[in-house]
Every structure is written in structure tokens, then in C-alpha cells.
Length: 93
Image (tube, rainbow, N blue to C red; front, top):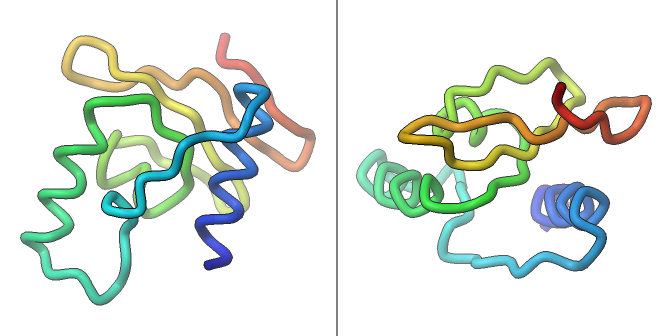
């Protein structure tokens, strides 16, 4: 799956090692709203690396086309740890 590979590569670049991928948490266009809500609830518990639309739905992080982000839970919301842009990984200020 191309999207999984791209997100996995983003996470690997950010943390310096291959991430563990839980395929039960993947978003797919065939999922019902209930299935997406259940997956989003599970995603909110950990460090996330991803791109739109998942980051918008789960972490309320808007990303421009072609960017990805790494976010970490922060007291009920999320804090952006880094962004992946055409220039590379940019740590959050």
C-alpha cells in the first residue's frame, strides 16, 4: 500500500528507526464513519506520523499539499513535533 509506505518512511526519518505499524489503525475509504471514529480514538493515544486527511481528523492539524507531520499527544490535544516538507524534516520550534 503506497500510503502506508510513505507514512512509514516519514516516521523512520523522524525517529531514526523503522516504526511499528498497527494495520488495525489504518484509514481507508471503505470504512464506515463508526469504524473511522473507533480508529481515530485509538490513534489519539500515541505518537503519530502522517498526512491529510488522517492528521486533520485525528489531531486537528491542517497540512498543505505535499507535507506530512509528526505529532505527540499533549494534554488532550496534539503538539507538532516536526513537519516533513520538500526541504526535509523540519523540527517544530
